[in-house]
Image: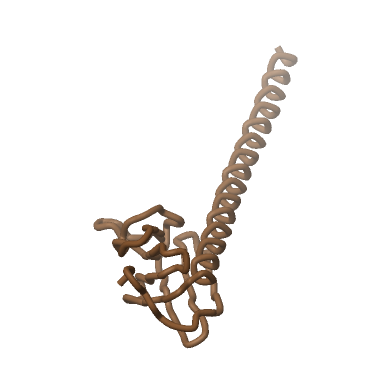
Length: 155
């Protein structure tokens, strides 16, 4: 009888340790996956924003939530921080149309879960800043290399 009680106690101790270790590993995996996904998203956002600004023929800041880019290849790009109705966070959208004005608020979602953010233009740079609900932040500043602000068919 004593041996059975000791065996059961050992079984529960070892089993509980195994369950705890599995839970810790799973939580760690989820956190790592979330951080990797956020890093990939931010890298893609950064590359796209830099590419659009570096190939701009003209820029128009509609407001702090919408930036229009007329590119040298004739395409029109819209960067929009959009907050769907009923949502407490915003998404970053990028839309591109060849040879025609692009509609703000349309396009592909590049990032989501944004609690605050802004697009801006200064005399020598364009910038994108976002703060996420996860308490992380993202900021990209790209120097301007355009000689004029000709939007053509984009606006």
